[in-house]
Length: 220
Image 1 (cartoon, rainbow, N blue to C red):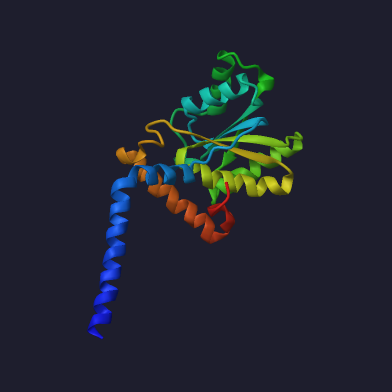
Image 2: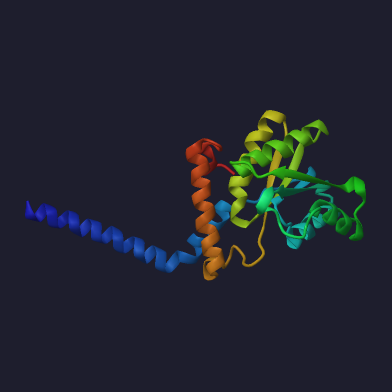
């Protein structure tokens, strides 16, 4: 009996040691793979590029969207702005959408090349945003869209949009962008680690609540 227990203990110790050695020698490859899981990138062209909703749009996102237009991957862009109410509103920005419009026009874009779409921040924010944005685009007969999303938020956002898009006949292509760090070194930045952990938890929550399907774990 003791020999059997000792054998099992030896096996478990060997497995644990193997895992430790695997992480030690291949940790960078594993972490990059984990980052790519949460930030998948699709291929192909689309009718529009959607800048996923934020209260304040990142300049990096706008630059990438303009590059996608210039390269011919998309014909126009949709800038999604989260609209908070009451005390949650950003101070001294009474009409942020108008400010974004003026800056895009100053950057050389024509009015028919972009649309600013304000959406409320109702729970679950990402899924509700997808419903509002894609229902608006379906009225304009849009059939495909590149979804420009921030880093590790991409997979959850992509699947939320994809679920809504399936019913409306709109194909979604994910396209992540990073600002403070890159997927090749995110674990070296405390902000990268926090964001990865936060988005992994939120992705898991969306799975548990049924907002996105289980197959989103395996399929891009």
